[in-house]
Amino acid sequence: MTQRFDIAIAGGGLAGSLIALALKARRPDLSVVIVEAGDAIGGNHVWSFFASDIARANRTLVDPLCAARWDGGYEVHFPAFSRMLKTPYRSVTSENLAAAVAEALPADAIRLRQSVSGVEAGGIALDDGSRIEADGVIDARGLSRDLLSNLNGGWQKFVGAMLECDRPHGISRPVVMDATVDQLDGYRFVYVLPFSDRHVFVEDTYYSDAPDLERNALLDRIAAYADAQGWQIAATTRVETGVLPVVTGGDFDAFWRTGNAGVGRAGVRAGLFQPLTSYSLPDAVRFASSLADLPKLDSTSLARFSRRYAERHWRRGMFYRTLAKMLFGASAPQERYKVLQRFYGLDERLIERFYAGLSTFADMARVLAGKPPVPVTRAAMVLAGIGAPGALEGTR
Image (cartoon, rainbow, N blue to C red; front, side, top):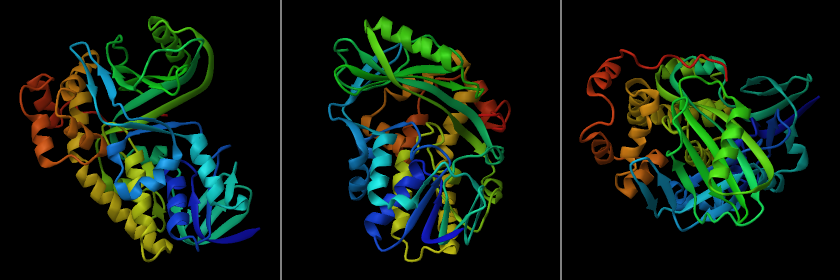
């Protein structure tokens, strides 16, 4: 069986869904289909971002997806100091993303639990033998092992749990980093989002050399953290896990040659994330907005556009990859927190631009100025390529 659409998107995660929403908002005449192998659009995720990450023109795309907003700023905690920053913070849930896609697209244009066997310029082939033909095809299925093998670096891995407390937890604003916890398996911090007076999302996160994730051990640490805060947990209503690449280098041309060159690529499959933080939402929003404004949306045009867009992103990311290389290669695992501790003592606007992936040359100079938080000799060796992180070939 074959069906035809104007645009076919392989992958119903954050990047693919935002493209569909942007197209339906700005090009409502186009027929768009999303093919997702999982049970739901967006999977099971909470994506958070600073309000300053999103340009004013794109806020109408993102605002309806937000499940929580904190306009009173956020906190960070390190062994040497704590700080409250004023930047408003937001969180998008996969449930809100799925609801928005369901409202924007007809039911038969959201294909769940359908695995893709092939993506090419003329359409998408499915494992069940059926095919979706389209004028424009976009591959947004995430990073595969063969793509990762062209990149160097380490991993950011986490387990997050939504905890329901039996009484108000007393947290009024997000804690984006609590690095006062024991430093285990690299740089460890706990991330806390108060969704209501009794619901708090707690995530145990690691900047680690290996991708192995011990889910139950991290859940036990989350429970211990909650106990240390004096919270009595009545229920755990969601659990999320993730293993994301932190990129220190690689071969962009080889990365792009891996896969079908005749279609557009989006999201992390195009390398569109902040190399040091693995932060993907701001780039996904910017890319979706730019794509929706293209004069031509055939596969050839989409392939050319996404290749050029991703190459510019790779060039702009050199500063962040260098910092990531220093974090993983020049810092002892238990000392990595000092890099972020120093960073969070800098100007608040600089921090905003850093997370958005929009650091200026002045920002870069300021981050690199002064006494480094890593041994100078080791840093010099890493920059020379000695002891720098290797290829991301491990399983995820």
